[in-house]
Amino acid sequence: MTSIFDENGKNIPCTVIEAGPCVVTQVRTKEVDGYEALQLGFDDKAEKRANKAELGHFKKAGVSPKKQIVEFQGFEGDFKLGDTITVEHFSEGEFVDVTGTSKGKGFQGVVKRHGFGGVGQATHGQHNRLRAPGSIGAASYPARVFKGMRMAGRMGAERVTVENLRVLKVVPEKNLIVIKGCVPGHKNAYVIVQK
Image (tube, rainbow, N blue to C red; front, side):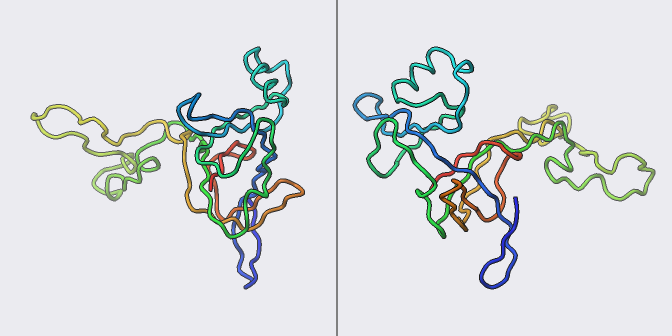
């Protein structure tokens, strides 16, 4: 993440994403696959890291093995195997959705994970109950804890989509797009950018 100044001198937080060049590795059609989609590959990987099936798949498209493969439905334009899609597919001012895996935060309590308020103030003899969940069940009926009860547990490392982020700048010579706001994931993580 970084920040840039707009024409009014306002400081805008933004994320810089390397979005290309992506190569068409497969074209899904209604007749063969039952649906229409475009499969794109990004980021080269060594041939020894790919298995035989992957090598054959990429060889058919005439491209080197890729680390990330994602399918996009409803892609405008007529594309063939081996075609390259660059950041020029995006334009400044339009809105995009960014999908990624959020940062993993490990095992967290209910205050951090669900925004609970804790058990009241630090009075009435409570020396270590400030961030406790409090009561979780009803009485002897139903005599159980309902499914979906919000409790402590593993937090983060989930697939998250942030919608309607504005494209502030497109830098074609470096394959970069600058998007307003933040996107899920750690630094250098893979994300999916969709119009």
